[in-house]
Structures are given as structure tokens and as C-alpha cells.
Length: 192
Image 1: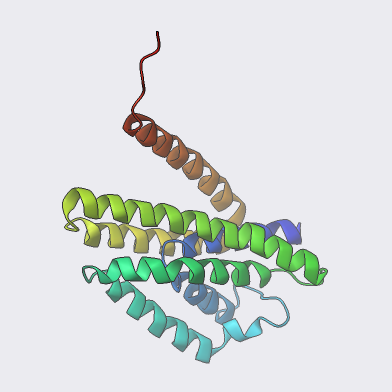
Image 2: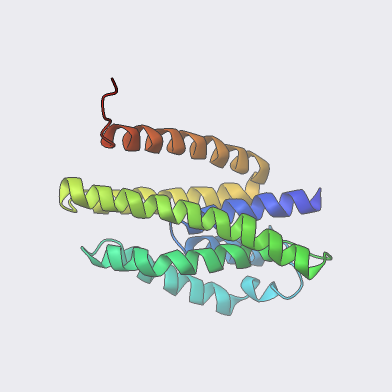
């Protein structure tokens, strides 16, 4: 059960990294410092005041950057590989007493994968928002992404299994909507 909970917490926080890279580590650090979260050996540094300070500063810079026109697009480009790496590290931090090959394989696939998928969807959404509104709606989008990252991070620690189920439902919904949008934009040729 510990491995399942670790995977669920890792996936939840990694998906939140796809919205804002530094919010989940900040929430993790606060939860670890308050005793609500136990980190695996080698990852205890996340629960230090130094890490909390670094994550808070990085989060502040990242959040502000998404409200500056065109900087948000640059941040999206930079955030993609960073989100995947952070998601992988976060997921690995919840495994203790397992083979390192299993630890990092699951972390890369589940953590890095969920962060990458969410980051790709946010990139597409920002691109569409910029194209359809000239970037006017991007600050609203940035606010929704920030709120979603905070909510997913907190829920991922408090109710991890529920959060993964919620993410799966939202993923299916987003996939269906994306399929519908792409299906409408592809011209079809009439057949005889």
C-alpha cells in the first residue's frame, strides 16, 4: 500500500508541476516541515528551511513571469523539460526501500510522464489563447493554472488516490475535447 500511495502522491504532484513547476515542491517542503509528509532517504533536503526559501523564491518569480506578455511563452518553453525533471524527482522522493531501478523507472514513467502531458496541454492552451485573444486572456489562464497547481498539490498530499482518479477523469475529458477540436479542423474529402 505504501508503494501505491507513493505513486499516487508522485503522480498528483507531478501533474501539478505541469501547471507550475515550483508550486508542488513548495507545498511538499511545507508539508514535510509540518510533519504531514515523509520523504524517502536522500530526499529529506526538500523538508528543510533552506529548500522552503528557495522554492518560495522560485515560485514567486515563476508566478510573476506568467503575467508578463510573451515572457509566459518563454517560460512555457523552459518549463517543459524542467517540469518533467521535477516530476520525476518528486515521484522518486516517495519511494523508500525499493530497488533504485524500480524507483527511477516508475518516477520517469509516472512522474515525468504526467508532468510532461500536463505541461504539453498547458502549452497548447496558451498557444490557442494567444492566437484567439491576442494574449489578452493569458493572465486569466495563468491564474487558473496557478490555482490548479496549488489545489492539485494540496489534494495530492491529503487524498492522493482521489486526486489520481480526478486526474484520470480530467485527462479523459481533455483528450475527448482535444480530439473533437482536432477532428473539426481537419478537412475531409468527399468519397464517391
